[in-house]
Length: 429
Image (cartoon, rainbow, N blue to C red; front, side, top):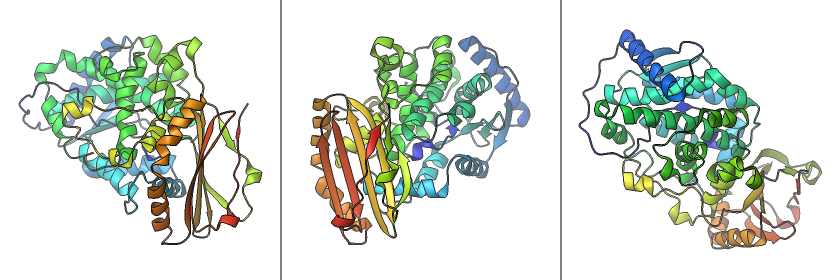
C-alpha cells in the first residue's frame, strides 16, 4: 500500500539515549557538506568492510526540493489509479478515517521529519539546508550507507524485479532500511559526544501522534525489524546496536526475503530447515463478471494483517519522541502469526465497490484465531462501508473454510446480494 512509496529518507528513528544539549544550527556551505560527506564515507567503508565503487554526489536541498523529489519518485513507481484504489481498500477495511486524504497525510509525515534523502536515480545525497550539524551527521551516516548499498547492488534494480505486491516490497525495504540503520547506529556509537540525539528525537514530536498505523507502522518497521532481521534476531530491541556480517547483508539484497513474515521471524529466512515461503494466491480471471473492473490486486502480508487484526481502538498513533513508546512497539500479534499467504482484490462497477480478501493459514488454529479477531469488527466495518457508499446497500461477510485453512473477508457497497461477484483465488503450485 502507501508504504511502498520508495523514498530513501532519513526519518531518523534515533536510538533512545540520554538527553543532550541541542547543537547550534550549522550554516552549511557546499564545500563544508562535501568535506563532511567524505569523512563519513570513510567511516562507512571501515564499518562495512567495503569500498564505495564511485564518489557520492552531495548537495543542499530545500523543503521544495524534498517535495519535488517525493512527487517524482511517486510518479515513477505509482499511478494515480493505483493510489486511489489503495486508499479505497484502506477505507473499506476501516484502517484509515473515511475523510482522510491519504496522500496528503503521507506527504505531511514526510515533510515534517525528513532532514535528508538519497536518490538512487542520480546516486546523490541531499541534506536539508536548515539541518543542524549534530543531526546532519547522523542523517548522513544513514543515507550514505544507502548510497553504498545502491552502488554495490542497485536498490531500484532489485525493486523492479519484485513486482507490485505490497508484502514483497515491504520485506525488501526492511533489508534496505535495516542495512542503513545498522551502519548508522554503529556510527552513532562512535560519535556520541558530537551528536544531537535529543534534536533528532525532537524532529519526531507530533509526527505520528494522530496518524493511523496503516501509514506509519510499516515505515517504522522497515528500520527496526529490518535491522533485527539482518542480525537474525526476532526481538528487534535486542538488535538495536548490533552489527550484521557483510555476507548476510549481501545475501539479503541479492536474494530478498519473499515476505514480511520472514523479516518478522528471521529464522523463516535464515534457517533452511524452517524456511517458510508464502503461498501465492492468484485471482481466477474467469470469476470476475464482465461488467466489473478489477481496480487492484495486492498481497498484504503479516505486518498489515496484524494491523487489521488489531482492535480499531488500538490502531492509533505513537509518540516517536518518547523512548518508552518506541520500545513498546510490536509489529505482529497472535492473530496474525501463522499467516501463510493472502490476496486482496478490489472491483468496481459504476459507483459500487466490491472488496474480497482471501487469507491462507498454516494451521486451523491460526485461522480460527484470526477469525475471532475479525468477528468483533463486523458491525463497525458494515457501518463504515455503508457510509462510504453514501448510505446505500452495504455488507460485510467473513467466511472460514478448511483444507487448507482459509478466512475470506468481503466488504462491499452499492451491490445487491444477487449481483455479487463470486471471486475465486487459486493457490499457485
